[in-house]
Length: 368
Ligand code: NAD
Image 1 (cartoon, rainbow, N blue to C red):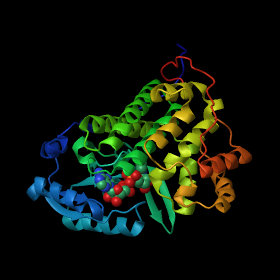
Image 2 (cartoon, rainbow, N blue to C red):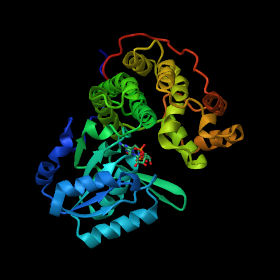
Image 3 (spheres, rainbow, N blue to C red):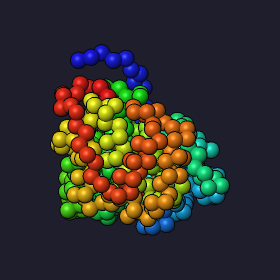
Image 4 (cartoon, rainbow, N blue to C red):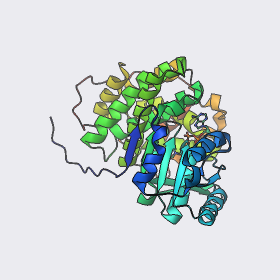
């Protein structure tokens, strides 16, 4: 096994995982030593927030049900002010990345701890990354104060997640693992977690789409989502995420769907520069080729595979390619304008990537 040099810096945090773990909420309050919770959620998930409030009784001091995508600063200000008014000593964020993002906006200002109960596979609950949108621009940063102190992963709460959202949210999680495997700061532990995250999601998602009530399948997906959030927190993302942020920001595209469409093409782009990562992705997918395996998984799940399906116009692709090259993230393969434009064309058309398999070696732990 080659000896690589690396830095491993695990983040603190407590994960309570398992069917029925939502029922341990009160115990987790004792563990955190908090007693005045502000519960945040989206308007659609108000009934869930009500369930939290009922469980907490007098320990719930308010519900703020106004979380929306990308954490607009106006909503963040309202939520912060409500947290101050109620004297909350913690935030319970129950929902997807948008809700957890709002919890993070509150914690960034007040330093009160977050207890997150994720209901999608996006992974924000495991990261110290926050994002707030002001004057149409989403500013992101890292701060330990926004890392949830406790995360309750209960597969029972995922049963309401519709098949289409499960599929795209799950592939969004796989995208974190794919980029972790060739990240410039990967290490043997993150690579192990990333490969297992892809495997768990790839095995669970088809069964979830077939039968959303299958708890075994939901457990597999949620376990994979936990791993994906953990590696997103510990490694830097690369060109795939940059392209998705560019497309999402410029054209207001849905987050998880954009990741789903772009991932096979970004993977094919990077394949020549990251053969060991590709071998591990293919191995986790039980496929001959990483990029094709990802594309075939999306097709099998009935998820979108073309940017055209998401409403992108062919005429937009040139300016997306230009924008994606501004302040690029570190990436295994250098960014060439023509090749990125071709990648976008392939993603727009929804073509199955050509095979890029160059190696079927047994990739060693940590090798990207
Ligand atoms: P989301 O939180 O925007 O949720 C989408 C919709 O699904 C909402 O209406 C929500 O109420 C609903 N929903 C959520 N769970 C459900 C369930 N179990 N059943 C039925 N409906 C449900 O979507 P998301 O993909 O989880 O989050 C996307 C956002 O999170 C983006 O803004 C992205 O940038 C951010 N994100 C941040 C990080 C980070 O580390 N900071 C990581 C991943 C994603």
